[in-house]
Image (cartoon, rainbow, N blue to C red; front, side, top):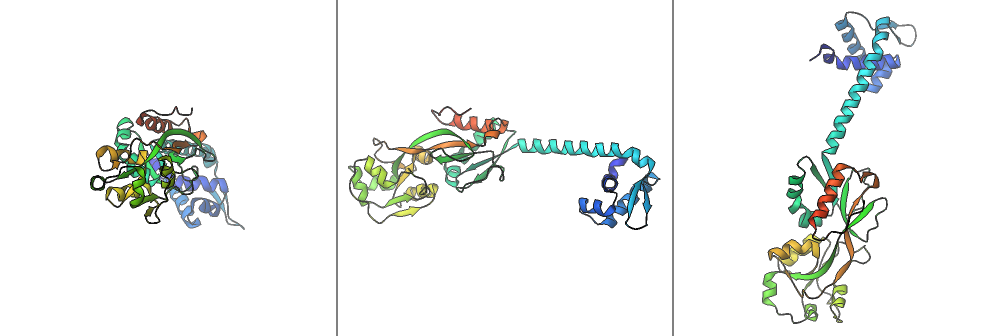
Length: 309
């Protein structure tokens, strides 16, 4: 280690004292006591074998640089500026290696987490930090890079690329499907229906009433049923045989493919007016990590919508 670096704190105390001409002001800037600044400066002088300040005790303490210290100060200040630049680049590099992604808890559990290994394999230099939240987020304050949101595509201040449209359909456990015989959709009115309340505040979100109407059912829903405010928990309850859930296609796709859930009346198509969107700030669009994650998301769907550029 270079000898001067051993005295880095002392050099910092000297530079701040020289700039302010005051140990007290330097101490306030460095968050230490004036006595600590004075001790650091004296230690530097002892190591150098020469004073760096002419001290005056008349009135308020004022520090005057010696001639040699005055000549050295610009180089020392330039050195601290270079250190600050270097640390800034290190910080930028660290930030570039982490991408912060916001998704709902259900989307994370049912779709994203099972596929993250694929993203890491394609981008081993990027670490993913997940923020699983349904509440509106300040992308700047919370340092969010990109997210996936379900809705009509309007989020103030954000670009929203339509990523995937979907349909909704009823699902139940294999055991419940085997124990019942439903000849037409109206038969479901006699069953315990599981209701997803997670998107109640979004206009256009399809509930059982909308699907039954699309299926041509005019009967009224029974007041009984199970109501849950998390789409993942809705599917979990259905898989456990607690009733029939109206599933969002993307959330249920893996469970249906694996046989954990059975799709009922697959010939009835009921598209959702809402869709999944990839969202990010306009000024973040060209960041390498944002572009990488956005492109990966679009590569995961069979027929992706062309992303916004």
